Structure formats: structure tokens, C-alpha cells
Image (cartoon, rainbow, N blue to C red; front, side, top):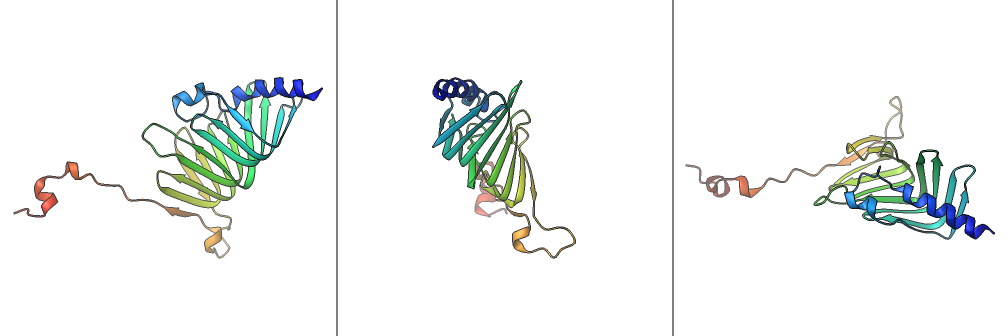
Length: 188
């Protein structure tokens, strides 16, 4: 019967999906992982689990929504998670008092040990009100480094849809650090 095998394999994989490697709130790793999907297929011999149909995965502040999620595992545990959708959506709260980081792409590849996400095709990353778009975005979750790529080559004539686009918000100055003279403009 496949149900007991599916259940035991499923339970063994779940704690490893967003284990200590996740760059999110410290207590996220202590939270249970919830996965819902229309179907689940687990092949222990190949180290692959496939979840299809409106897949929702959560662990604390980490959330992943996709049409399909494929989890690759090896002797060390989960090595890679591949989510596909129109688009797939990954989000996390990186630290208390920070805004939630949202990542979108038709394909999201999460390299667990490296704490790195690759967003492919119609990629978009929203980080603290800054927005990055391109054909591919690589996001180092640990270092919070973003590399964005357009689809056009350097020799072709670029169009807006093949280029990387950024919206970077200005830094907000605090009025608390200004003197009364600076705030009123009466500096005589």
C-alpha cells in the first residue's frame, strides 16, 4: 500500500525542507512545516518528492506557493527545491522589524545548503520596498546579495522587456536627528 510509504517518507523529508539553513527568523526552524497539494509522489530510491496542484508550503514566516514543487535529497538531506508556477512565489521575514522579502518566478530553485535562490523567467524580487525584475535573479539569502540578469545579449539592441529594471527607494532621513534650526529653516 502506497499510503504508509508515502506518509513515512513524507514525514522524514518535511523537517529537512527548511531546516537550519533557512535565512529567516530564528524561530522559523522550530516551527512545523505544513504542505498541502493535490497530489504527492515520493521516490525514496531516487531521493525525489514531487508535489503537484496548488502547492502551499509554510514554516513559520516562510511561505512557498507553486503549481509544482520538486524536492531533491541526498545523504546530507534536502539539497534543492524546485518550484514552478505562473509565477511561483516564495516569501520570508529575514529579521524582526524588517519587511517580508517576496520572490517570484516561473521557476524558483532554492539551494538549501548555499542559502541561495534562483528566480527564472519573469523574475521579480521585492526587498524592503526595492523591486528588482529581470529574466533571472540570483538571491543570496544569507548575505542579502541580489544579482539580476536580462535576457538580451550585449550585442543585440536591448528592449525594455530584456533588460534588468530596478526601483530603489530613497533612504528616509529622520527628523529626530535634525536640530530645531534645520527643521524650521531659520539658520541665522
